[in-house]
Length: 130
Ligand code: ZN
Image (cartoon, rainbow, N blue to C red; front, top):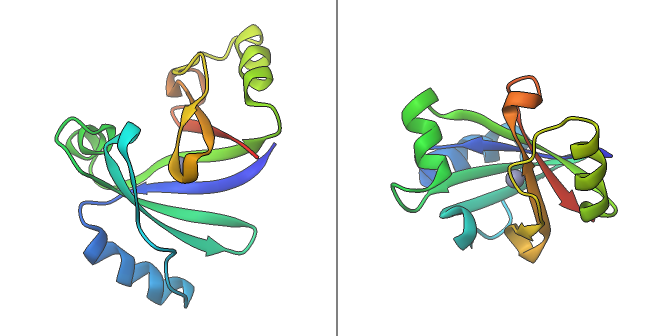
């Protein structure tokens, strides 16, 4: 596994994107809507990994719920794996609690799944198949 990206919940992409453009000295990739997560995403290439800014598109979005509960900030860390179904099975066997028992569609049509922060030191972990 290796670090793929850090996901940051923001209230407004139009406010947060220019901040990260200044920080990283580059433009975000074209914004994308992730229907499954009810969010819009702006992604920055940050060398070894990426930074993903997430804005809710609906009050029922997990991003909207996160911001209501904890305020804007780091929402998840994403690790890339070669075989997502196999990784989920292995992690579940080792006692990690899964949010998604089967892969689902994330940004860019990639297969993703979330692990429950209860079993991962309070951090929401996303796995992405690459
Ligand atoms: Zn993500």
